[in-house]
Figure 1 (tube, rainbow, N blue to C red):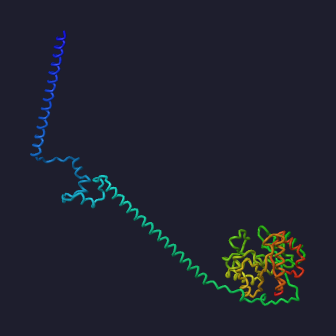
Figure 2: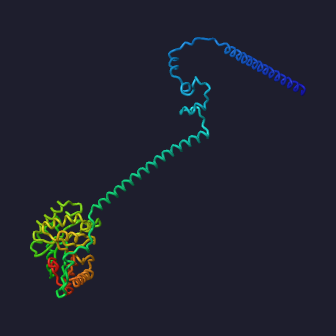
Figure 3: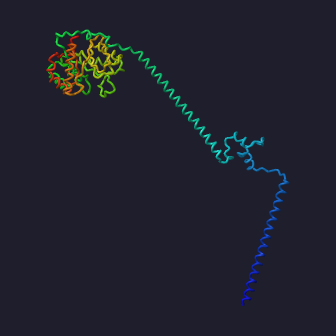
Length: 393
């Protein structure tokens, strides 16, 4: 039984081997046939190439167009007359050669160097422009300085106040006479203020502000007084934020200043004396003060210097226009405190006793008027007077 099985198994194996052998033979035949075809094609191709048949090409309309539109490579890069040109020789001649380049680190380095060079050139141009602007500004500044210097040279040199001699300077105090004290109250503009000052009980000079919309009756209120002054608004420093309407400025023409003085004469027909309201800038300016004194002289006014600036040139122009020089000695109410105001009043009395007279200026604050009314005992050694009664006038 076993023998039969073994024989059957051997027969199956032999049949399988025969079958595989036939398949291998078929595969080899196909491979041989394919090789023969390839070799024949190769020789056939070479034989056609070695014996070209010359034919006259027939150009179509499409061919004509292509002939006209030569490619970039044919026209721009290669010169048929110089076939020996190398790629390296062509590159410097043409900018658009990126089609032939490969991206390399060397190329990147070249690009970065070129970019940095361009940026450097731009930066150099910017720096140069900035330097030019600075130079222009420097020239403008120098020109401005030269102009300012010329303007300063044009202005007359300031005269030393001590070199100017007026009646005030030549006055000799006779101590047999009682010293005089003139107290001026500035900024008066209402009937109520006028009445309070009149009730103090001794002579006080009232200086009235010119009429404006906020105190339109100030001129009328002054008319029935035996003596009063005009408190003339003039340009202050930039720190003063509330100038009066029609305040005189150093840039005003003589015609404008004269018209203002003429208007004051019409409003206050009986006034002779006027002092400056603020005016620290105006009274320092020689040109402005010259115009003012000329107009004051024309309309019969006398200027009293409130001395809001230590650099006031009022004395110089009082002398020039042959006017008496009158100047304030002290302010009494810069500090609105009863004791402080009283101490300033005592200081004014001491000045009067020393030189024979003194001028003190205050304002119509309730505390100031209260101190003046309640300090009569401090004035026993002086005689209160109006400004026009100063002993050297």
